[in-house]
Image (cartoon, rainbow, N blue to C red; front, side, top):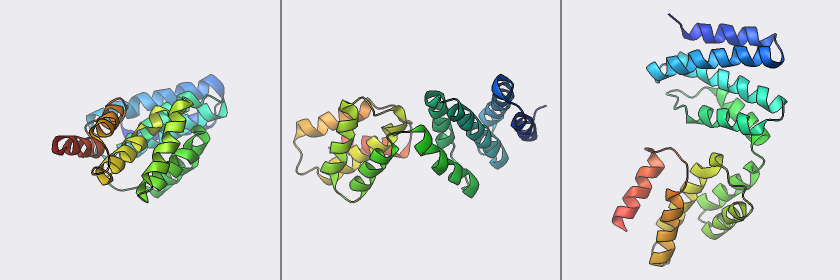
Length: 192
């Protein structure tokens, strides 16, 4: 029977390896961590075992300039819903995100505009990223919240076509569903 400690042991072995040997150990650790996680998603130690393996894989793929693969693991890392936030894991997320996502600064700026009710600037930044084909799946959750805040706060000023266009844009995003954002959008759509 495998345990979360096996994942940490494999990560420890991988630290002293390079190239494909390192990757094989990390993938072995990931397989065990994913299996444990699928059986018990709320166990704190299993969440940490999975998170640290994903962090190691992100760093490995960053080191060989494969940001596409690194972003897949980063997305999985962000999808873990921790009961208690781990400060070291949160610091790793903050450290890794800009290394993997070259558009992070612009998306963060759009989020800040959106939260400050400066919706037109937020939408403008996102539309520029879309036009330049730079809005990757990693940003879809952020864009969804920007859409929600905009249509919710400007509902009276927007035309029916504008609202329906934003709802269509939201439906085309690849964000987690079910989730809080999705529920908020559905509630808004029902009300509208």
